[in-house]
Image 1: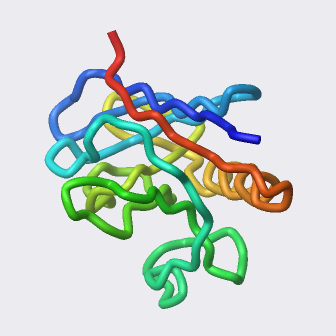
Image 2: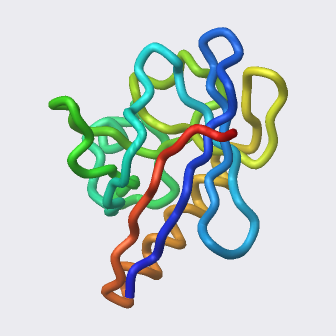
Image 3: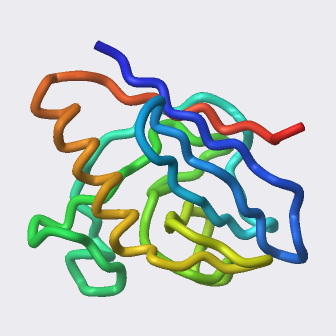
Length: 139
């Protein structure tokens, strides 16, 4: 089975680009990206892999295995683009931050939101399902 997620971006507010990450059911998360390094619009496969930065303690991971969501094949030549916890756009070097609430340029409750994202991916992995994320700008 294939799960299709959608990240719909709002217009930028300074260096912050807020959005909504919809899992196709249940409550969505809010997202935050840094304008200067946000990923191109497109469709990306999402997988759970061990994050070297989480293993070293530079990123928070909800479980001791240090697995975080990774977007595969992000152009042009970018790698290690993840979904992870963070509250401010400057905490992202090109990754997508998630939370459950936001104000004009920041998100809150990032760790519980990331735990939910990882749990959804763990369930999909257990069922041998694929997860794909479509990134687009809102109207």
